[in-house]
Image (cartoon, rainbow, N blue to C red; front, side, top):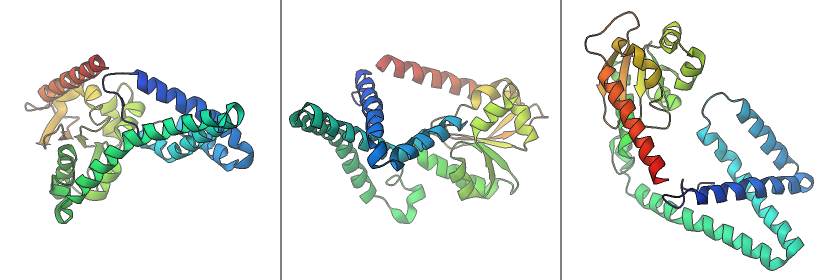
Amino acid sequence: AGLQQPTLQGTLIDNILWGSVLIVCGLIGLYLLRKKAPAIPVYFVAYCGVLLLYPYKMTRFFMPVAPLLLLAVFVTLRAIAGRWGERLGIGLGALLSGSLLFIAAPLAVHTAIHSSKCDRAHAMTSSTCFAPDRLAFFSATRYANEHLPADAVVLTIKEAAFSYYTGRKVMHPDQAVQQGRKDVPGYLARRGVNYALITPFVGGAEIVQPLLPYCQHVEIVQDFGWRTILLKLHPDTTLEKNACATFTDMIASIKAEAADSTTEE
């Protein structure tokens, strides 16, 4: 529902609370909507069924049904008002609405202020438009567009955006990990993937672990900062200057960040 994770820094109780409210009240609301608006629960169930079958990451695929889930929650609160009293239903609705506004309003204001300062004439290179990690990704796309062969196939998160800006063929890392299993480099070689772009985005560095045993066959082409690194794969060549040290440091850094995050929670 657009809530920060966690909404109360350093705690898990708020996430458990919100998750319980959304799941329990949402399911009840969808059940109540089955007669007045049957298309909503049917669409919701069908959509979730597709997500269950989808084999890769679905981070933002939940967003289209979030408004329907919130609607179902408010339908549940209205039913509570009709059954146990108007004041209780109104109070719960006000509490939920107030909580959402309390969290979302500052974020919306911050986004609006930041967007108003964006230099749209140079958006892809301006720090007033994008965070540094996004700018590093755009730098990588410009480099790839200028230097990579036209027939290059690149393994990367944000594969749609990368392909749009570079015109190169792409593959999502999840496909390589799931299809390649114990021989990811072999799978990549069979599919003609000869480059990889590591990024700081969710899942952007997961390919490093399965490539670590073969790091002597991986060349660092360009480091754009912010853990955004373009690699070239040489399956049949052992390189003196390879990515082994970079991979080892990156994995250690990711593990340390994960440990720090767990400690905070």
